[in-house]
Amino acid sequence: MAQDLPGDTPPVHDLIGIGFGPSNVAMAIALSEHNAGVGRQQAVTAHFFERQPRFGWHRGMLIDDATMQVSFLKDLVTLRNPTSEFSFLCYLQSRGRLIDFVNHKNFFPLRMEFHDYFEWAAAKIDDMVSYGHQVVAVDPVVRDGVVEYLDVTARSGEELVVHRARNIVIGTGLKPRMPDGVERTDRIWHNADLLSKVDLLEGASPTRLVVVGAGQSAAENVAYLHSRFPGAEVHAVFSRYGYSPADDSSFANRIFDPEAVDEYFAAPEGVKRKLMDYHANTNYSVVDIDLIDDLYRRVYQEKVLGTERLRFHNVSRLTDVVQTPDRVRATVRSLVTGEETLLDADVVVFATGYRPDDGLALLGEVGGLCHRDEEGRVRVERDYRVAVRPELRCGIYLQGGTEHTHGITSDLLSNTAIRVGEILASILDRGPGAATESRPLTDGIGTPR
Image (cartoon, rainbow, N blue to C red; front, side, top):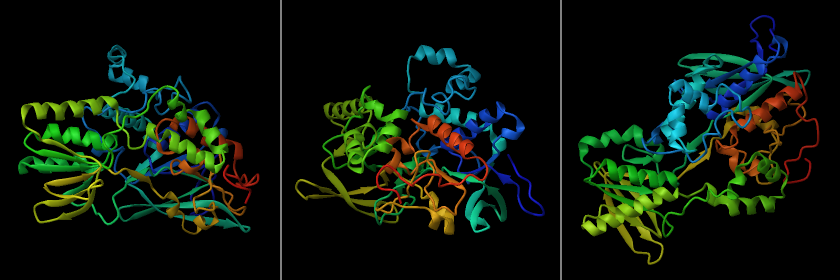
């Protein structure tokens, strides 16, 4: 379906992907499998740009014993195509570990192993991606008063390349969230920095480390630093009374089902809020019960032995952090008494979560053609396509940042395989030159606009 145009005009791709994390790797696989089953004229042409020099997914959190919180069956392909050669089971077979994994009787692989699976899958389709290319602009190509194509400009060093697209899919992932006014430094980290910076502490013999946060990443950081530096105190700071266990029971897990996306999308706004409130404990600020039990065992054992290195500041909040030349001074305030505790630490780690990257920020004037709801959030159709004005004929699809319309799986791996299949189906259904607004604009939360 590629179209060659005269002169220096770039060839037109059916799809350009911005970012090449797991979501867009899954997108590329879906395209590859589709193209393998159709003739050349029905093939979907695509290319992806990734700013990193190679595939990488939360590398700073690939702690040796950290496991996935999602079943291996929710890999890049299985829920869409159980027979795919890109499945986690095919990966295990290629690595000679399939029987060992079966004998392990565990649905939740090591995070490091799943990262290796992602790398393995990405390498099989690396002809579709340009690494080391950061997208810097998306410009409209106007013909007869309508935006017929989008020109995507990417920078690699001093070189600029331009690719033209009928559709784009934005999968730029999540960005670390820091508290207002706090900047990341060599002693003030986000947990995303953990493994890339922790070696700097080896020769320094740290004596005190502080971790802020109540979720899975925070607890993993506490456990890791406590084991890695046996001569250091590790202080955990959170506003709860203790870590809350994640609800991974069978009925609660239905919130991650593909059918739950349909229900959430169609639900009134008030019901959407209730669903998020009801089921936040499946994903947000919760910790696996085995890790909670391990940390409690450690702190109790230290009390018995009289060597308390693991300290918990619960019902508390870190209210100030100031870096000095060789330390960081953290101020911890009790939410009950208001009493303040000063902690002079080698490092403060903020495990304060992530936020979706604003992919629409790249769109420039094209962004002005995208509809937003009454709260200023981008309006998204059920097929993950941004709702736009009639003069924009190109499709803009989002992989992430759609929690307000599609629910809790927006930025998670759980529904990735199904989502990319739906996006591909939408692109095929619309075809070359299809109008973006083929029906009244609704997003399940308001009236047509």
